[in-house]
Length: 401
Image (cartoon, rainbow, N blue to C red; front, side, top):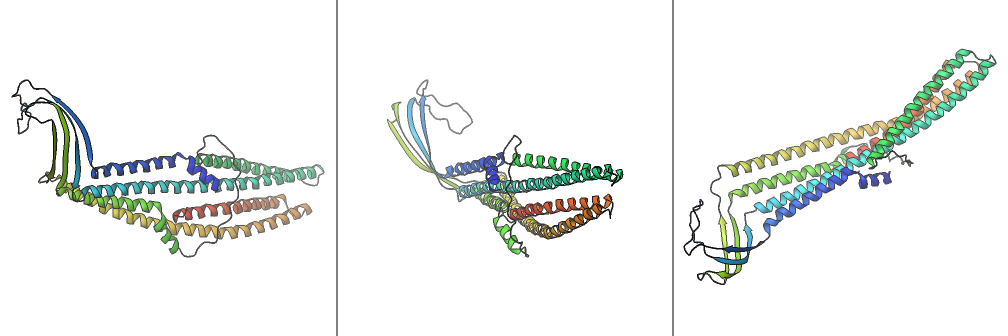
């Protein structure tokens, strides 16, 4: 099981895709953080004027400056001083979104591991059922041979031979279905392990887990703390709240520092050979037609919606944990019942065989005993692996994987 789970995590494209999304979300954090860091830019300009009084054409601006001939190069620097928390909140929201993607990756891993466990146990169940059916076919073939030999010696009737043959064909039909179920289980398992060609595996038996707890409260507490889906919802809620605070800061001013330095090797006599300047820029939003207010309200409503979605998901997790525990408890009780059923079916079959050999009963009674034994053996094998599947589901629901 451990090898299968490790192989699935390493090779399944669903996990690789989720990891790429998480890495992409981390790049968004770096993009947002860049607004807090200094920005450097290099610039080179060469300007030619037709005469000393050349000016810019009326292009929609308020000024009409003189165009002076020059060739200059320099570096400009800008640094945000404060925007009253808007960029900080955007950065925090980007981090929360990255955390949500990481939680989504953990969710994908947990879901894949659950699928591997369920398919692994289903394949083992199919193998166990096939062994039972193969033995049933062997036993019924032996019975048919014995009854046919007795019928040749006129110790049994042809009707007994017909019943024995029908019983054998029924077992062969079960055998065909069991083989198909096993092939289907191995195909599903191979797909989960990242394979594209059908393969057969030697599946090692897993030890039955310890007894189940009677109270679901500790499991619920673990699920609320460990489930990656809830971590994703919490991260999305936090990101929405920070987005709301960032949009609120749109109403506040922005203060930035600007600086520039460079040389002017070719220039008009009115210009200097070098230049340097620095200053502060204060931008104060006055009116945006209600856009910023609407953005703030939209973000606040989304934050409230995210909070309610988290509560809804927590309720779903609590329900799923309790239902998973009930199903596992029921499956655990079935283990003991199917074991008793199998013991009684074997006893009844032995008695039916003995009675038939003594001529004290008909082959119909023997066939019914054989059918009951086969059913009990299949039920016992099925109950074990269904319990293991439901235990794996319970581990998934509690976030333990």
